[in-house]
Length: 355
Image (cartoon, rainbow, N blue to C red; front, side, top):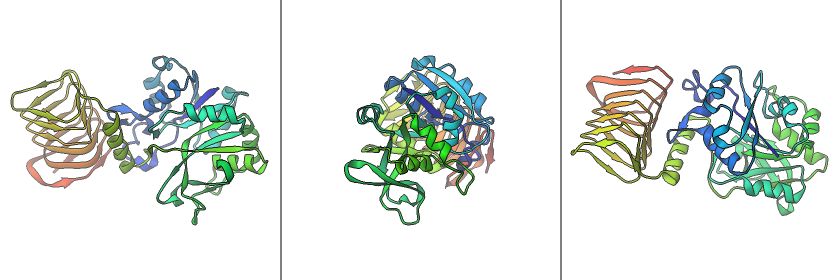
């Protein structure tokens, strides 16, 4: 079995932070989202991985992921020349996939469980596909599955006005090679893309068995700012372990689960976890609150930061309160006179906000 990891797309919902980088490489708990995906693929024992990339961000993905050696896998990069839909990505990858069954995993999706059980279900059931589902509050924003007896999928709908269930499609699928014929049989949707939901529906219409598995744990699609902050919160809450490799002066204090990287210093500052601070960070006369991720080389002075994702080499100076924010690389947020209000920001790389 092979894996197909989708790391293309333009990340329009996360602009401007994705205007200069790939959304799959935005860090959650100071680690690229894509790395968590590859962790899951590696734990499932999949060693041949096709990585769908786009012309805009493909080189960055190549540089960061490399050959896949750190996960014990071989990564082959597959260029999707345009955002033609998930089924179009599979079609583009057909030379790599051949006649092998495969796991398709969206590179900006995080799930709180392994994928081994889903693969085992696919292999034991001998079906054409297994799709992952998750109960959601408002299914109108998702692809939605209607199930029959025994969890077999009888119908799929893309963002229906009146959903037949509250079961949304999660961005992990297991397919047999039969999906290629299904993709050949469908036509582009109203938005001009080949939809994977249409291809799965084609399998169902051909009376081929499509099974489902309802995910009990958490699932997060990190396509928007609030989703990214939620993912950061969940990962810090559930997976972070305390590890202090930095330096604290006598007036600084760390409480709760906090990870501080090498070369980082706290001067007259407090951190309340769960929180993570990268390497070579200086935090002076400041408070870092729960659910914050601070990237390498950042400088924070006379400020309060809480529930934020801050990428590397940022400068935050004299900000009374920064919360619910995502800052790209090399961002400056500063004031010379103090800001007596809470700021909520989404800033792309090299932005500067001076108040």
